[in-house]
Amino acid sequence: MKYLHLVWAALFRRKTRTFLTLVSVVTAFLLFGLLDAVRHSFDEAGQSANGASRLQTGSKLSFIQLLPMSLAQRISQVDGVKAVTYANWFGGAYQDPHNQVFSFAVAPNYLDLYPEMQVSAEAREAFAKTPMGALVGEGLAKRFGWKVGDKIPLQSTIFPDRSGSKNWQFQLVGLVHVGNMKTDGWYDQMFLLNWKYFDDTTPYNQGQAGWYVTSVKDVNQADRVLKAIDAISANSDHETRTMTEQAATASWMKQFADIGLITTSIMGAVFFTLLLLAGNTMMQAVRERTGEIAVLKTLGFSGTSVMAMVLAESVLLLVIGGAIGMLLSSIIGPIISAGSGGMLNLTAAGAKSWALGGALMLLFGLIVGAIPARHAMRLNITDALAGRA
Image (cartoon, rainbow, N blue to C red; front, side, top):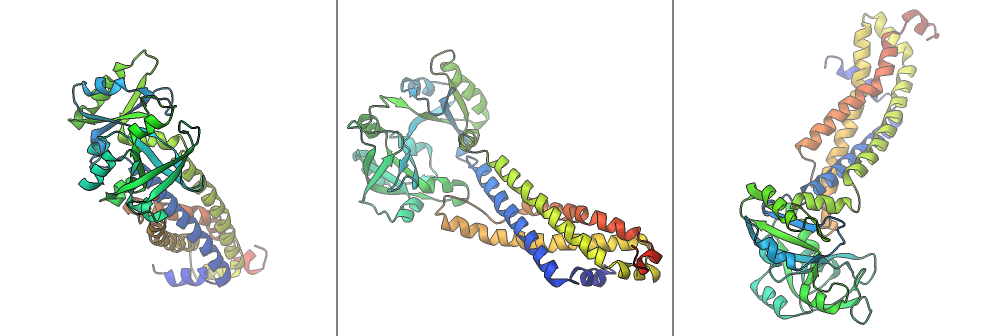
């Protein structure tokens, strides 16, 4: 801290170059904050208190393989099972194939196992009495401007009706409210339709379920229960794989993309480029100040002191830019979440993200400053003043 004024003056000796380098650092750590929020958002899926007591059973062969309806009764008889429900993936799109909707055909008791999806008694009654009825998350309804009573056309990307058409029509009979958007925002984008209407209308289901959801009486017995469920269909033509809701959600996400690998790869490329850019900036800065460094040594500054000041300059550059980038990610993340209508849940950077980001700032600062600091420490005064360094 004694020589902070010298470090600061050296850092902003070339203001334009420093500013451009800071922009690069800010951008890198802005991306880091946002991508870390994306990874954290996907990691949180299925980790709600209610989700801890639920298991999901799907085909061991493939998540698109259907399961016989007879499994529901057999699963319900497993010791430790509280309730069983089932659902099928519908694969709907609204108006345009790019407007994908998380649409599921669900059993009559589906909502009983998902208390985080709050639906009024009137809406549940209307859903049960209306074959073409649909319950829609408030966020999804707001996204497309839907209101209760509207006729909603959906195009299934998978299932045609009995006439061969993939154009389906539903009536919105109620909205799904989500209390905790941080952990349950996923449900705010759901489109639920009646499983029986789906099964009666398409010739490709024929009384089968896509997956089963089981509520256990004691979460501490979940491991035993899931093994007992899978034992029911062992060595059959419909063997199952049962997982906790968190594991099942993570597995389902990985069918489309490995979020952790994607974010790590992107950040690896970004930070590698940042190291090259910032390293070049520091090399140029020290090379331009060769004479000034020689004067400092002439005045009594040791090689170690000069090296420490160059390293401090490098670390300060990374810390200033990194902190600004992390702050911007904390501001922009929630804005993106609000704009996505609940599709994404990007929270402000937490303590763990800041700790990791801070460690990266210090590490990169030391790496970037290592070579120019070593050069400054070993600089010969005579050669430098004579212009030979």
